[in-house]
Image (cartoon, rainbow, N blue to C red; front, side, top):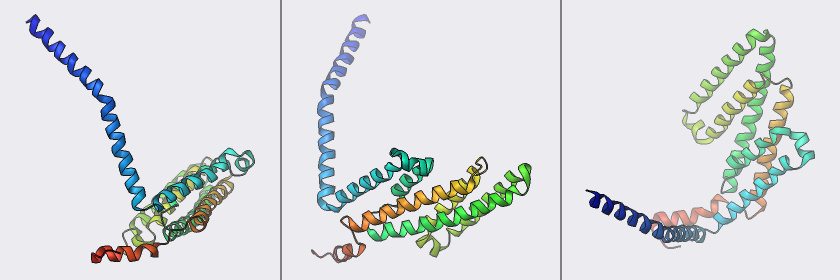
Length: 228
């Protein structure tokens, strides 16, 4: 029994040593595979590399709202909304970026205005009635907006805007319950969102722009099975 146990321990130790020795080779093979796939993706359409650089450049610029003290003193913690806007708005083509930016801009302005209005209305009912009114309007507008997303026309063109409306209204109304300067808070968030969206549009249009119409001939040829 002792001999069998020693043999098993020796075999297990040998297998472990072999696995450790083979680990660098496995990592190397995996890294080479990822590098080949990355090269293929970039080679198939070099615009993808340019788009990635543009997104990185836009995020670096909006980060200055946080890094530069004078800008941070103006926008404060709301600077994070500019970064969030760039991440969710910047698309591959100019048209898609413009559409998302407009959706986000209008939805933010509408939701912000409603959020401030609901805050003022709730303040008239005192400290006890304020959370009840805020909770009621959050439920009402969120439920109504979520149901509106099932309409085909809204789903096709304004789905992202509806989501932003729900998010912005909820955050403004809820955070405003503990904040004294609700209008200032809403204006800071709106301004940083508009700046982030405007930066995406400018970079998308003026730095190696990609227009959706450029891909239509290639798409048609692909569907017809022709070599373009």
